[in-house]
Length: 219
Ligand code: DX5
Ligand code: ZN
Image 1 (tube, protein in one colour):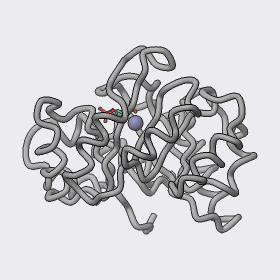
Image 2 (image 1 turned 180 degrees about the vertical axis):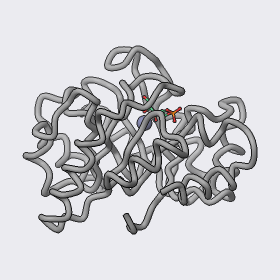
Image 3 (image 1 turned 120 degrees about the vertical axis):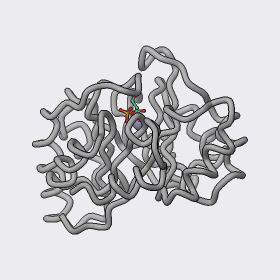
Image 4 (image 1 turned 180 degrees about the horizontal axis):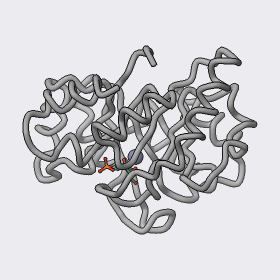
């Protein structure tokens, strides 16, 4: 694919004791977005952080904050994440009783809206909002933890969504998240993704800039 490929590093693998500097380092290294994984220990079996932390790190970069909410029920927290400085707010269909209303709420704060599909969640879960959203986040692991193995079964879903987006000429970014490395990244790009999230691979040593460049060009 010759799309404009973007890299959204997940700060889940960053040094949490020095998060401000880590954000600055990602900015300098050429990240396009900052992927921020919010987990509540209920929707997913892990807890990370909330809007207070996001507000604190907001001042370290002007890059868009790509906020992935793995919390349920999600809707009552949208305003808090919006106020904290999120630019894209992504929710899971299972985390709301009315996805359309939740998407409208995100848009009402002037933010980009994303919908994320777990490996087992089918495309039909988002079809009723596809004309309203700005981003689709395909989970290529079961959400909850960094460092998991890429589930290649999700690739047909990426392909199908790319076709729908292109056929309908929709202005939607197709992002993939979980187990992305230089090999699986290439598969995801080939299937039609245009944003790669990566934590473990980017932060696993060596130069952040080289790792980001290598991932951007892995296809
Ligand atoms: C998983 C998160 C991912 C994760 C990616 O629930 O949504 O963003 O941090 O980490 P890696 O790249 O290590 O799979
Ligand atoms: Zn994520």
